[in-house]
Length: 181
Image 1 (cartoon, rainbow, N blue to C red):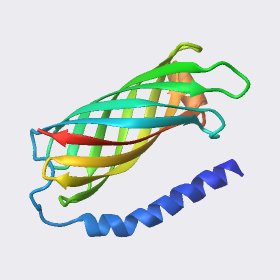
Image 2: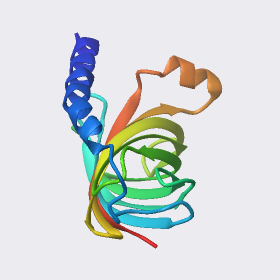
Image 3: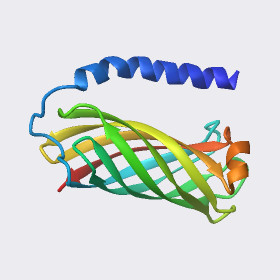
């Protein structure tokens, strides 16, 4: 039943994004980055386990470089404070490399991407994380944007556990702003 809920959510999000993606294609309007530009963003973040039972809040910062007009690769650092059901509050952090592909070249730019890195905790064993992400940026000025992003990270501590724990992971979501330079 949980798998059905996840698939239903993914289908609903996809159905909402398809018209947006088709409208996002267009000619460059002077907003956003070009190949070789850099990007810095800072966001408020939230995270939760896969069942949304336990969660936390924190900050996330990204530094990226545009490989071309639509693809950015970079490093992301996050730190979070978390509350656990029937347990002590905890701190966690994460460092991930990421790559995102942006659709279109207008003020509104949805994107999809992937990331790989490590999550570390004060209450549990550090673990590797690999994830998929989607989001959107809206350029309020030619080089300044607001963004929202959601990512699901699969947790692992070895190659074998990555295969065995494909359904074990966590959600992270952010809302923030950034600048291209």
